[in-house]
Image 1 (cartoon, rainbow, N blue to C red):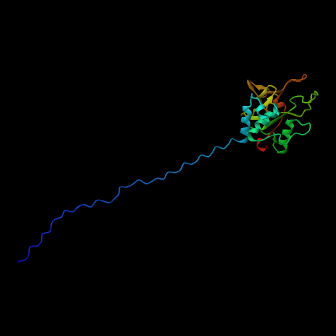
Image 2: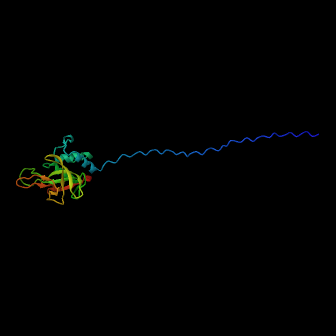
Length: 212
């Protein structure tokens, strides 16, 4: 008699746990923040004009310059590290002429439409040598603050009443105003029977701030 065959135990299949990983989000590397570059300083002329504007109505004593028109211009140019009289003055030469000489040597003189920070020169604004004759040459100087659409130039200067703004329009050299709008301020008082003079009448020229 054959031995009975061993019965195979039915085994239930145990499910194998899945090894599939859940999808992961891609790792995004943080981009380092860009360092902001420091803002570029305003153009040289704008800095000079801004300084001049801030001096309107103020004293020049803090700037170690004479309290006159040349001192105002020198104080304005100190804002960009320029000493306009570093070359000195010649015997008998006034400070305005010395600044003009520097500008001439630098090729800065012009009569084009000026830019903020340019220097403006005037002649015969007063009787410097007190001889009653208009032979005084360059006698006054200022700094251009702005130029308006109609060509009127606004400049800052040290006048008899302190540091102030004045206007000049070379397109109307003998005209004080147009309606209520001032085109030219007076820059020389009436003297010896001669009428007062407007800025446009005694204008001599400009010096470019970019060349000084």
